[in-house]
Image 1: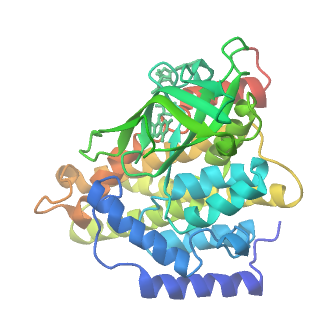
Image 2: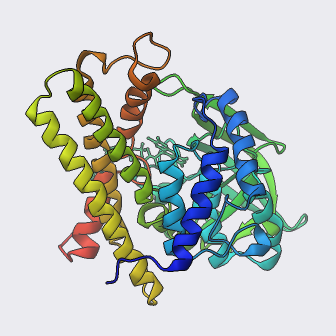
Image 3: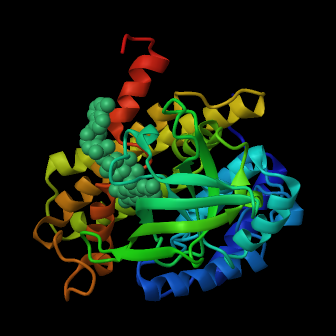
Length: 389
Ligand SMILES: Cc1cc2nc3c(=O)[nH]c(=O)nc-3n(C[C@H](O)[C@H](O)[C@H](O)COP(=O)(O)OP(=O)(O)OC[C@H]3O[C@@H](n4cnc5c(N)ncnc54)[C@H](O)[C@@H]3O)c2cc1C
C-alpha cells in the first residue's frame, strides 16, 4: 500500500496541530475519573466540540467534520502528540455512536448525537454485572414489558461502569425474554442515570479515583424510543459496540506512538545522567517498534474497511496486542525510573508529576477491560484459527 498522505490529509493534520498547540492546557489536570477532574474535562470536551474536533468522523449535522478514517487516525496522532486531556466522552463518542449509526432511528440520532458531541450528555457502559463479566450472556438484569405506558421497566445491577458516578446516561443490555436462549431475549437500552429508581454508587479504584460505579435499577421506566435496535435482538447490537471497542476506535495507535516517544525521551534523560541497564534499553526499543507495528497494522485495517471489508473476530488480535504492548511499555518506564518508579502524583520527587506510575497502574487494567485477554484468545483460537472449542 501507499503510505504517503495526500495534500488534503496533510492540511487536516496541520489544522489539528495548530489548534491543539493553541488550546491544550499546559497544566496537568486531576484525573477525569474523579469528580473534580471530570468537571474540568467536560469543559475541555465542550471546547473540542465548539471547534468541531470532538467527533471528527461524524456527519457535519451532528457536529463532526465527515473526516475519513485516515484523517481520524491523523487527528488521534496529533491529539496524543500534543498531550491533550483524557477523553471522558469516549464511551459515547467512540462506542455508542458507531452503534447508533448502524442501528439507531433518525429520531434517536438527531436527539442523542449532538448532545453527546457537546458533552451535554456523557455516557457510561452498562454491560457487566456481578455474575456476568466474561460470560456476558449470563446477564440477569431484566426488562419487563409495560404496554400501558409504551416501554419497559428495568431492574437489576450493573457493575464496573467507568465514570458512571458522573455520567448522565448509560447504555447496556437487559434480559427482556426470560424464556429465550441465553444470547436471545436480550434488549439494548439507553437509560438515564438520574431517572426515578436509579441508584448510582461510586466504587473506588486501586489508585484512589472513584472511577467506577455500581448502578442499581429498581423498576426504572424506559420508553420504547430508548430501545436501540429491535427488542430481544440486543446481542447483535451489543456485538457492534464491542467490535468498535476492540477493533479500532477505543485505542488508536496515536496514543501508543506518543507514549513510546515519551518513553524514548525518558530514556534519554535518564541516560544523560547515568548508565541505563541494557535490558531496559532493549525494552524501550521494543516498545517503540511495537507502537510503530500497531500503527501500520491499523492502517491495514483501515484500508480493508475503506475497500468494503469489515472488522471480524480478528478485532480480538488487536485488543490483545495493544493491551499487552501498553503493559510492556510502562514496565519499561518503571525499569528506567528505578527506585523513583513508585512515586505517584503529588510525591515530591515524582518524575513527570507521577504520570508514569499512574499510567502503569492503568495499563494493568488493559488485559481485563473490553473483554479479558483470555476471552480474546478463546475467540482467536475458535473463530480466527478454527481450532476446536
Ligand atoms: C478499567 C476497567 C474498566 C471497566 N469498565 C467497564 C464499563 O464501563 N462497563 C462495564 O460493563 N464493564 C466494565 N469493566 C468490567 C470488565 O468488562 C470485566 O471486568 C471483564 O469483562 C471481566 O469480567 P469479570 O470482572 O466479571 O471477570 P470474570 O469474567 O469473572 O473472569 C475472571 C477471570 O477468569 C477468566 N475467565 C473467565 N471465563 C473464561 C473462559 N471461558 N476461558 C478462559 N478464562 C476465563 C477471565 O479471563 C479472568 O481472568 C471494566 C473493567 C476494568 C478493569
